[in-house]
Length: 159
Image (cartoon, rainbow, N blue to C red; front, side, top):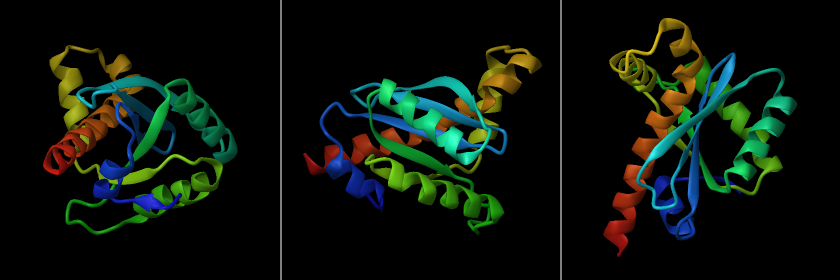
């Protein structure tokens, strides 16, 4: 299935379909999942990156366990909106993942998601050591929350 726009996903997503979000880091993959009503994004444990085939297998197994119906991938564009090397590597990851899954995939601008996640963890008084292990999943939850808020808005417009 090709990469969809958010509008296309809003039409294609089954009722009560769970959406997963990922924050693709160089060492970890942050993961979050929505509830069936698309109200809340919840972080899941990070996936430690090894090589693509293992990363993809682990990610797809987790998505299957979560009954994910779609995947939102954080796109790390620069603050000025330009695409740097991290955007290219994220798109390459998705391009390689697509033949392995039938899940619809959407890119979501992730600017400042890690900053927002860091702030939230600081406000919760999470220690520096624990923040390091949770930051990517917290960023994935932040990315996913923005995406599911948009999906709900699109669905309400079409109702």
